[in-house]
Amino acid sequence: MTDNHNFFLRNVWYYALPSARLKPGTMVARTFLGEPVLLCRSQEGKIFAVRDICPHRAVPLSCGRFDGQEVECCYHGWRFDHAGRCVAIPSLLEEQDQDLSRFNVQSYEVRETQGNIWIYMAQPGKSQSSSRMEIPEIPEVPGFGDRPPQLVEVMRFPCFVDHAVLGLMDPAHSPYVHRVWWWRSGELHEEVKQFDPSPFGFTMRRHQLPANTGKLYWLLGGIPETEISFRLPGVRVEETTTTKHRVCNLTAITPISDTETEVTFALYWTPSWAKWAKPVMHLLTRAFLNQDRAVVEKQQIGLKHNPVLRLIKDSDMQAQWYYQLKREYARSLAEERPFVNPVKSQLLRWRA
Ligand code: FES
Ligand SMILES: [Fe+2]
Image 1 (spheres, rainbow, N blue to C red):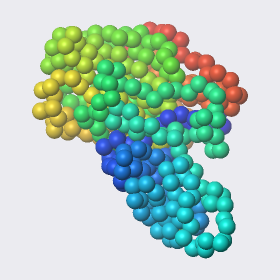
Image 2: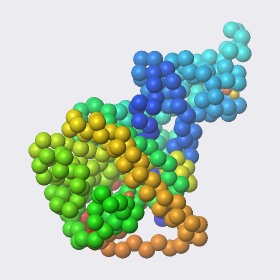
Image 3: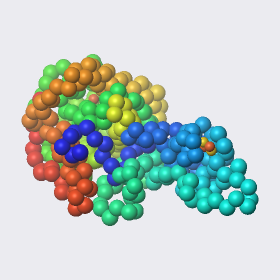
């Protein structure tokens, strides 16, 4: 499995949904890694997730009803609780003693933090608690406590997860894919960045933003410094700070199926004026993500022919690290041994 690039990483937390999209007493049907999942939020605000297939005759549970506590299948009214336990089969007579636990539906571990819902996608038959291995933690955006993002944008990319991740970590595409008049001049400059291994990934060491970058950032007051980290399975956290302010973004990649991937971009900021700029920032974020999606759509034309893809130094080093990290994680799981980060501290240079 691990010699083939095209596999989903298991035993990791994936970004599931912005918290705000799951209101109390409602349920949302989703697909993650090809598995149908039903996310629910109780009236009290607690979230849970179960497999979205009724164990009786396979009708999606999402076609039924959720009363804020239990999910009821629309076909014969079987009911399931937050742990996926079958708690009622209406067609049974009282004296027909049935062990309902035989009809439980699989449940998933879910967690909510900083306005984001995460789901743990275990290897089939294994829960997180049954695994003694260290796993990548759910990433936290530093400096915002449990505040939700001020802006969140979710977009579907028509590709396998790896291509979305590579696009996210690709420093050389910006001058071509994100060429817009208000951001940068078209000229390429040499970039030199120090990278270090960090838990289940790597970090571009904190550095000052060069004067030519980010004309928007002067609004932050002071010279901005930025640090970007990546961790498995596909999460990037970018932290930009000045003495006064802090702007962070979390970009998370979630495989939906072999051919669809979801990219979530959540933005957190401290400047109070930024709330007035929200509509504009929404438009810019969408425009930006659309540019990435458009090029991924074009890439699919070529990928249909299964070409060998060439990765170069140094601008594709992060892509190579991603593949190495992913393979090493899968191997460490298969061999039940600790994960060894394959990334070594290194200076990378490229033109962008
Ligand atoms: S199919 Fe769900 S209760 Fe029968
Ligand atoms: Fe991009």
